[in-house]
Image 1 (cartoon, rainbow, N blue to C red):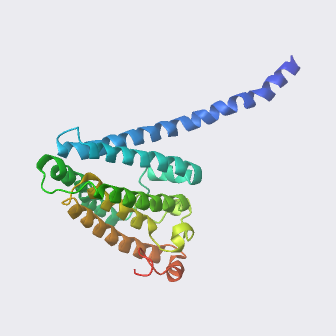
Image 2: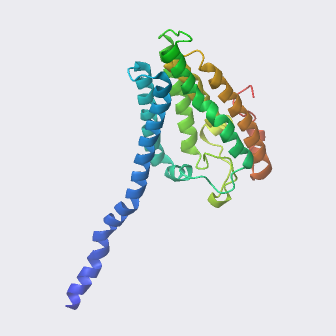
Length: 250
């Protein structure tokens, strides 16, 4: 009997360990799947509601490309920077008040890119854009999102809001694209903003797209100031890497 008990005690952890790992992973996998489906659904509504019809080929292509990017980005981050996924699924403590205000102001402008595009390109036809601009938009999107994802991959502190992440051991990141400019994620997101009007065929959508970029530039200034004042080592880093967004320019 003693021998049997010892054998059970020896093998029990080995048998249950995989189950425990699956138990821990399952909730995260379900959350990620839910977020991806929700994000795709939200984009579909933003694109097709103002268009007023579902037979819009450019709209479906855009939603499909956006969904594909979300999936690829999550798979990439799971491999190189998995802790960032969890961090970006919540709002960290200590988010700057000005960044909350920024979200309420600039967020609707970003959304209006899709509203204006749908109204313009499909429902009302305010302007006409040649389909030859679509591949240019795709190249802008691909280049911008490659830079955006690369920035997320090397920076574990790439959260949604601006804060000094003392709870996560916040430190200066100067590898990858951060060796060349201080805010590469913003530059990558410019590609997202500028590609949407081209891929959806709307000249008028450039108005909120450009306003969104202006808002991102303002946020870059405010974030850079915060990091200089409050993150140890950032002032020295800013002297080594002189440019915020555009190498050789600014």
